[in-house]
Image (cartoon, rainbow over all chains, first blue to last red; front, side, top):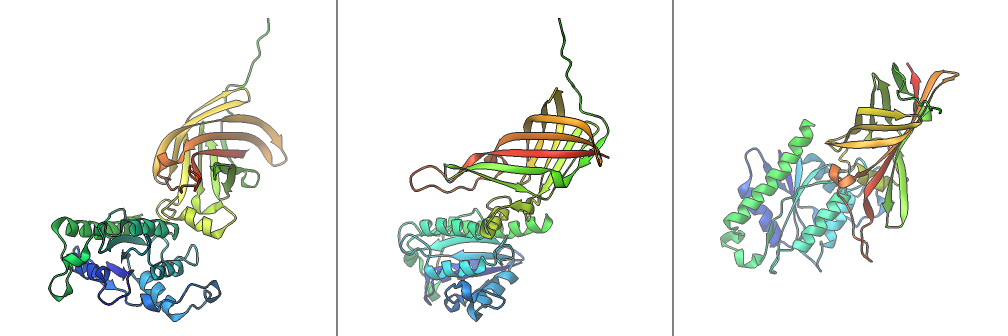
Length: 184
Length: 176
């Protein structure tokens, strides 16, 4: 069972990228996590470019999501919402309607921020966007506030017990949705 | 003193659907102002041994926008991948002249709920292709009871989609 991890933050030392790396430490049995490193290369969505062939960055995103059984997105919060580049990627992955790679794909959402709320608004917006895009959105929530206070050696983002359990719940939620569909 | 005799029974035998001359539809209040209507074109129904059964292919829902079509089939709404059909089976049918009341179980999105359909019955009559029977039925459901809970707040208050949905079926049935 392959889960594709996407960080909505592009910077190298992003807390959300670190949260995904931490997710790799808490994988349920039989689940592997692959990080998508091409978000910055996804071109601005332009319907004129969306045809039989699409630009290489968008194509790489679509292929990565298509090959995954589920997706785990970790998002920061920019101006109370989802970062533009992440939204842009979802727009590419939501088309063409009906056969889009996001259609019926289980997706779990989490996020880290330096603020007191862990980006819950961005996560709520992201769930709404993913639902409209046709994804099978996992109900589980995981918000890591004050992420900068959780940094440990070698850049690890240390989670407390409840946060780690919520992370496992999110992953299990995504995997079980995949299994439910496979059995249907 | 006179007594008016009215038909109290549906005809016996097996009746199958004339798909060309039948429709099933939905109507739901949209944006708080309009009645948004549509239908499902891929459906079947039979009346046999006093039981009315029908089912429809969710993917055959007709809307004029492919984005809305995609959203309706997604997990936000019907989740057609997991629940490709909606279905109905009657548990009792009462006829009183032209009026008909059909009780039964409606399944949408994997949730089964009892519903009561009311409407009219016409026939049977002799038609060029054989005997025909008409049923015109409707019911109103709370879509949220079937797990269809998606909604969006309107800027001025209220929600874009009503919970209450009217379902209709106008069936022309042919004697098998």
